[in-house]
Image (cartoon, rainbow, N blue to C red):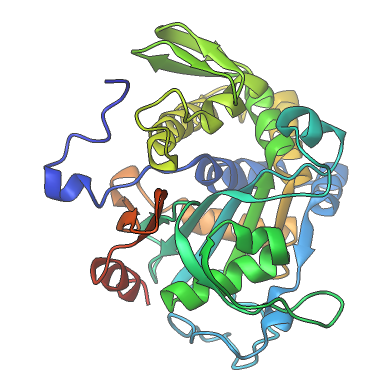
Length: 350
């Protein structure tokens, strides 16, 4: 077997997920970015970040916030402050926009999907977090979503979860998650192909170990069994590989992604990062240059505030789970939420 999913008992293993690459990119790298904030570098990184006003687009047709804070407002147009209980939708997108993304991902330049999706739930005093992975092949009811032109998309039944991003961007991705879970997304973060690859290169690569040869024609990854040092392009292929594993499903790919994010976090925690100004700059530039957030996190100051709060979360206080799923009756290549377990999981995050 290529990689074991976990060492837990069978009943626990079924509910356990893998922390995907976006978790390491966004939550880990914001800690690094916070140390780089002075003068021109601060200004440069701040301008790098792209923002989407999701609150205004969705208005009041949303779940209630998980908890109120002294500075929270009843107005849906005001962002949540980085304190108190918080839920963040984190996406890794396969955007083909720009030459770098096209070279890494192929496909048409105008298309994009959310290849990686998770909900990061942070408790009220920011001492613990739960990360819930949503398989991209999950069949969902995709709600009608507002479009930039003032119109709206149509409701779609039995649609793949990652199609929400394709048809309506971040706004529709957030609305789909909220309708599916009943949980308010206080914030949104997204990073694309090029940003992920550049981050790995900025770190100087990552080290992974495989127990089986990998030869995946779709991700263009060929690795012999053993330990390898991967550059950014190879690491991206590693994170996207699935056809060389098990039944070729998205669930199998999550195993590789978890190994990769652990390798990346190991590099980020290396002692030389904060003492090497050039390396630190490259890492911060790679993250912010490909980062899209909601307007409550679209400045380096806001990201730094969030990062400072996340410093209190010890590795043992991070719980990772996957939304319970079953094979879809209509399509063996798709999954559906396993009820009532899925609803019970989401209810625990409200």
